[in-house]
Image (tube, rainbow, N blue to C red; front, side, top):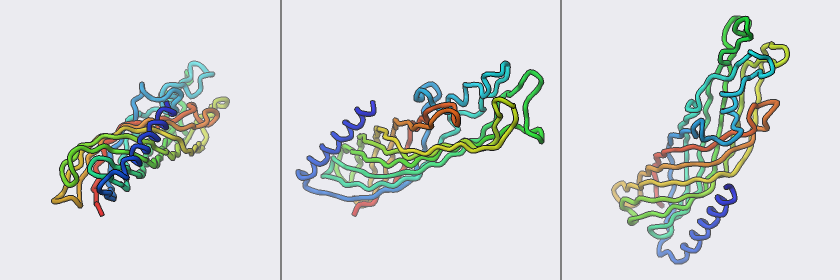
Length: 253
């Protein structure tokens, strides 16, 4: 799948380069704005995903009937990324874009129903055992758009490209030792870079001419990073994919 995305992205870039000499007009522009991102759902995430493992695997499987998966929801990782992009347009219909966005989401969790047959295991002050799960993602995207209509008019468009996904995932808080059942504080953290693919479609709406415009764009991203798995994490991967709708302001120059 990843090789397919690489080949598709390379082909799109070649097509844009071929179109450039033939274009009667080359226009540069920049855009910036905010988006709304929602992660891939529980049943569609990559195999070995750490969030799915945290929700489904007993934290201490060797001590029956002790249970204790973490209590949170995948949808808690919805985020509002900030973004910017530089565009190079060849004529009215082909556009190459290079941009980046940033999102940082912390989700609060606790051990769910962690019991050992005699009662719930809690902290020294009789409170729940809490953790913060944090996911930071900084994608750098290279995309090609094919636009309808003409410059300075309403232009629907579609396209796709590649995404270099820089991510950091961490679990910070209190945990239970699998041997002694004692509670300890720790932070587990993994950073990395991986390659993903994306598809997009949207509408460009001019504002009193051809210099300014508003973009409303939908995107869908595929990509996952490696967490390393045990002993730090229950899953070997973190799914970074999902859908987004972005709202940006464009300026041509």
